[in-house]
Image 1 (cartoon, helix red, strand yellow):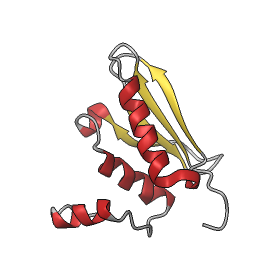
Image 2: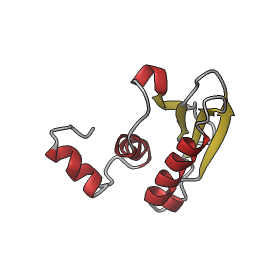
Image 3: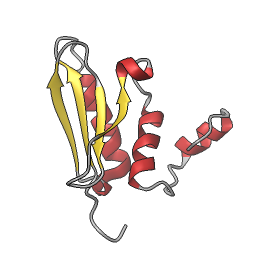
Length: 110
């Protein structure tokens, strides 16, 4: 990527459900995989069983839901979340063993 990324990630997590460590782990996984290709990964405390991962591809763009616990049936595994972030950030990017594992299991990668 020639220009710095403007992709922002926001992870909303329920404080009453004690999901801070889970949210922080997802943030760490995304930062470890994408590093400076992301502009920001933020943790946003919430309540009511809310767990949602959003992305904003550009400063004036609408926030997009990458994962929502109730809609998507629980929590993502890191592979699924990384693939969804990659598909917004750089769809041509190869995630190495993550993509190979999906192909071996017969899971199509978008």
